[in-house]
Image 1 (cartoon, rainbow, N blue to C red):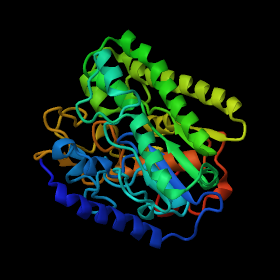
Image 2 (cartoon, rainbow, N blue to C red):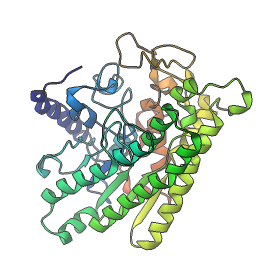
Image 3 (tube, one colour):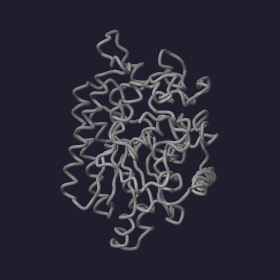
Image 4 (cartoon, rainbow, N blue to C red):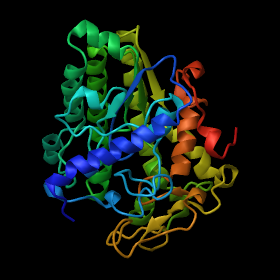
Length: 390
């Protein structure tokens, strides 16, 4: 579906208004952070894919019923409501992040911005193409997002020292990123050993971005790992197996693909540890999205997920409610009546309820290394009805 260029200011106004509404209800600001910046793909995108659609063609996340739970309308978020980054912003007393499509002034982003875009990869489009991996959604990579951040930063501060002071009081959320690199490869049937071989390159690219941010002045960076991809309805549908041993008996997820995600996460943690030694005055935190999600995948009822932990709430039918020819957001697809009782919203995105738990686990629980400083939080993810199993 096409989008006229003249609609961009209207979309920006709408997204700014959503952020402002959230900010007006904030109980106070974090004593540690005055701004929040985020990078990544559709797990973190709060509207860039809506603003930056190639040739004006909107992705499926830009149509109803996306956004129905919290916003009452589609915002470009690939969920029924808020994302992890939204809950982080709320707990810091900051407005929900407005997407940054480029070429805008810092006056529009006084408290941070979101550079993540659905479909973004860690690795460059040309590098992936050489490996036989093609991204049909966007040619945006993590480095492009970092470059856009530098572009905005140049309008916020006038000197390197001023930028370092500003960023020392900012929280940076770097990811999740890399998932699209792997998704594209797996779904294009690239050989498993070839996909495993690109993991070090993905991790190195994330490490390079960390270094660039630190050299600009960033002090506190939260770097999430990959989620358990073997639990996504898309993977469970495409890679269905007749062999019971291919599935985790507790969760029903595909073991090999979850082990692959953990392989990425192990290498990422090693890279973070290396950089922490190189930059001892920084606080580089690993966000264990995988560990958090595994808990409710294996014991969904404890977290209120009485609908399903592996079937998508929104989709076009099939055992996992994923149909490649009729995905969520397409005309004819259907959503469940109670998204909060499902873990998965669509083929590879969580519901707001699941994202809220992950945010709580990372910020308030044991799923960040080192632990997040609780005194920096002014809100709690559990304040609006979070299912808790602590």
